[in-house]
Length: 111
Image 1 (cartoon, rainbow, N blue to C red):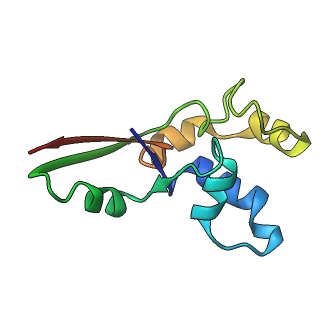
Image 2: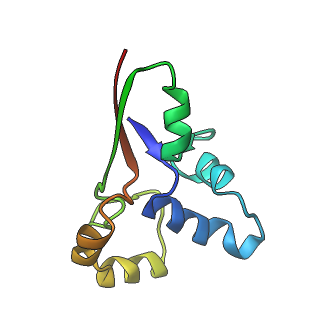
């Protein structure tokens, strides 16, 4: 499993920590705020490059509870805005129209 850079969690972190501070890099935002310092997140194209030596590569993404802002997700991220977002977050809409915007990128590769 790899972290998916273009996930809803990545976008939320960028909006919270980078948008108003003038930082532009989603990669740096994920490295500083996603899990532990230095955490890396990849696009599907970047992940494919990492697995270029493999003959067959299948990449899928999964919408975990963090992307859906379900209760208990993101315990280290708090605040009134996040609490409001958890109440109004359109989980059904995200599941239906953005199923590939999940944080977890699962990679199956065969030599």
